[in-house]
Every structure is written in structure tokens, then in C-alpha cells.
Length: 336
Ligand code: KG4
Ligand code: ZN
Image (cartoon, rainbow, N blue to C red; front, side, top):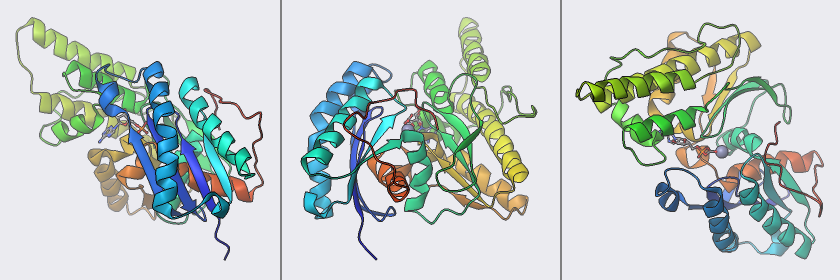
């Protein structure tokens, strides 16, 4: 088999990452320069700050990835880059860097959709079997995607308001937790009980859409009312109650979709896929209901934003003949 090596760039949000992927499934390098420490001070991602970081980091990440992978530009088959969705200024840094390298070394350029990257991260773990459903849960997205075959994405469910990760971050802020709060809420939740019984929005509706802003408001009202009464609530119970609501809705609706679409593989990806309560609940329900379902969750490092998933997606696109040219531009609101 020929060795197809893809150098892949990701800079859509607050992680600068460059990876070298062999044949779409083997990670030779996956360098991730996180900006979490500098963004923490602002309680979220500030686009200007993100762009500046990408500019500083991207060449260093690329050089580091090539060194770790023990490859030279002459060994590469193609250069891939995320061109959307994301922050326009952040995306442009990756797109410019990838274009420069592709044209300087006369390599094909492959434009990759960030969300497709999250789905294809699972390829780095095991082969995908179609048809499948992918649940994408991140700071910016909560989507259920049906894939009849490779390269075909149909969004069957989406969030009507806040993304799941965004809700975690917002309620975390109310509890005084630093951004991003998802992991901290996850940890707190493991020590508490679902004693508040927050609403399970849209759980019974005959669609696969989600809504988390009502839950967020219920949470904030509960905390503020208690503050006014001078009463201290258990942060662990608040976290556990919030998380139980998110998990109930996501797991119920996702497994309903799995059944209706008759798929045998379920992929969960995006930063929120790191949530231990969510992973455990999926595994429990799948076992309890005796579902013949292959549940694939990439390891934590591949769940968040990274270049490796872009390389995995790019390999599929490369085989399909997808190419970008000098006019490739960032597309901040790109959908499937
Ligand atoms: O995919 P990602 O790294 O970036 C994008 O948004 O594209 O996802 C980041 C999100 C943040 O909102 C963060 O709070 C959330 O993932 N997150 C978690 C956990 N770890 C990260 N949410 C719940 N539980 C976790 N363990
Ligand atoms: Zn992402």
C-alpha cells in the first residue's frame, strides 16, 4: 500500500493544531497549542486574542509536527486545512499557512469542514461502518448527523439556542468556575445528586432538536433566588442536576434517532464528548436496551479541536478528488 501523508492544519477557534496523518487513520504527529490559559482571563474566547495566538503558533506547530513525524515536505501527499465553520480571523491564519506550504511545495490543498473533522476523528480509532449517526457536542455545536455513506452528511437535529458546551460554560461561570467549565462541572457532578430536577427541554418532541437556554435560565434563577434568601446551595448538587438534564435529553433523543435510522454505529465527538457522565450513560443505556450498537468515542485528545481529525477527514476528501486552490477562503458559517 502506498503511504499517503497529509499535513493538516486546524485553527478555527482557540486551539492551534497541526498533524501528520498516514493513510487517514494513523497519527504520526498531532501538535496542539492550547490558548486556554490566556483565554481564561477573559472568561471565553476573544477572537482578536485567538487570531494573534494562531499567528504566533502555527509555523512552530507545523515544524514540530514534521519533526515528530520524521517527515520532510517531499514525503507529503497533500496539505489539508479547516476552512469553516469558526472564527473568521482564526480560520484565515490556518488557511493562509496551508496555502503557502501547499503552493511552495506544489502539493494538493484539501479544504476541510471542521464539523466533518469531528466526525472523522473516530476513524483514528476504528473503521467507520455506514450508515451511522454522529453526535457532535462542543462549545459551538450540538448536532445529530446521519451519514448514509462516506462524505454524506445530513443534519437531522440541531440546537435551537445554546450549544451544549456553551451551556456548561455559562452555568459554570455562575458557580465561579473558570472557562472552559465543562470538565469542572463534570467533576463536581460526580459528587452530587440530581436534587433540583431541572426541565428536560424538548425531550418528548417528535424531532431531534435540542434547546439548552431554558435549562440555563432555570439554573441561574435557582442560584439567584437562593442568594437573595441568603441560602447556600450545594454546588455539587447544582452541577449534578444540570448535567443530569443535559444527559437525559441528549441520550434519549440520540438513541431514538439510532433506532429510527437503523444504524449500527454511533459516534460521539466534540469537546463535550469528554463528559464522563454522558459517556457512562450512553454505555449503560446501550447495554440495558440490548442494542446492537457500536458506540465509538475518540479519546479525549481527539474529542477537542485538533489537526489529526482534519487529516483523517482530508484523506476521505483526497480520495474523492476534492481540491482547493489559491482562491480558497475562510467560511465562518460553513455547514455540511
Ligand atoms: O470541541 P471543543 O474543544 O471546541 C469547540 O467548541 O469546537 O469543545 C469545547 C467545549 C467547552 O464548552 C467545554 O466546556 C466543553 O467542551 N467540555 C466539556 C467537558 N470537557 C470539555 N463539557 C462537559 N464535560 C466535560 N468533561
Ligand atoms: Zn470543534
